[in-house]
Length: 458
Image 1 (cartoon, rainbow, N blue to C red):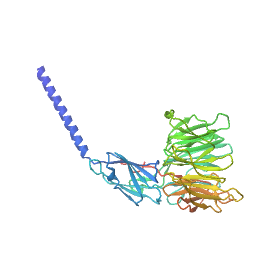
Image 2: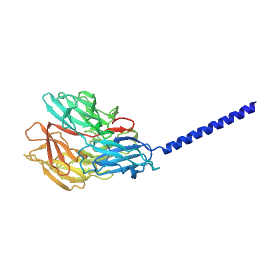
Image 3: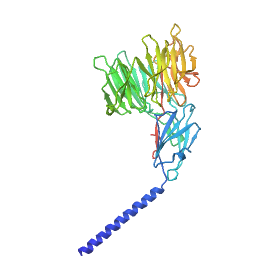
Image 4: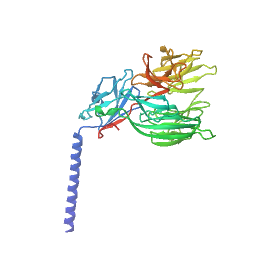
């Protein structure tokens, strides 16, 4: 009886194993015949072109077939990547003036097609302006229909505006009195990517947070394209200075650093530029990279702009004879001087690849007129244009948008307290003034993501 029971048990076990193997084989065959799926699409802030999307599929894809996806309107673009992750990159140079429709197609390595998926994408940034009013200064956002929307309550003065590079929020330094400052942060939910045309729209406003408030000597902000925000604070008491970072809008982390000037985060999120008495130091942002050799650039220099898609940067160097020079810094190479003179460098910007630079120079003298220059990466002057009766407002900077190929700044006439928002063509240097009075202006980049199982952007 015992042997017969043992034999029956062995036959049952063998049959069960064969059944499980058959089920596994059947599942494998079903999965092998299942077509690939589009899992998610997200706006990629780190790009070398005008704008980019990261696309994730359920299976490794044949990129040549994905490249057959259509884009309407047709703008120059390229596909990169391999396996199941690919990137659509819009080429720089041709301005995008409206939303795009992307019809995603493609086949996996077994030649099975995905189901065609239409997506609507608006890569254009939003214009932010600090507008004066009877109750103080207020941060406004220009919506797609041209109307302006307030993002924060009015402040006596707004000293700095710092949008996050992934478009998920904007921070300001507000001044309520001579010794009281506060750092406010508005979270923003973008609607720049959708599976239906009606899903595109102006951003939804998230909560408004007070990150810092109190008696401060100064407060400085810097953001990167990953979505980190650095807050640098200086108090009136010795040893009251502190530096911390809000990582991707969620976690705070204190940085044990001492700086002699304003810190700047690198666009790619890997490090920061630390001003010291000996020059500029490049430090890793991740403490785990502590073994990385410290890089120092000696001399009296300050960062004016980052060319975010190439790792290049534009610096202004101050010489003992009161001259100033503009330098292009290329990773692994010594700085390349692209301009030198006695004029004041009021602002500078560069495109993502570092192939074009824009400078606003203020000539010395009673008139103090501003001139805008377009240079190539070697320092050759491609175009020069006088701003006439207009000059850059105090504290204004050049903010370049690769999508529209435009520079954003604030200009004013001598003797006037309030300036105007100005858009400058990156190609022709033509100046276009908006009716909106302003003291500061910045671009808020497009952002957002779409997932296959969601009904809209997230």
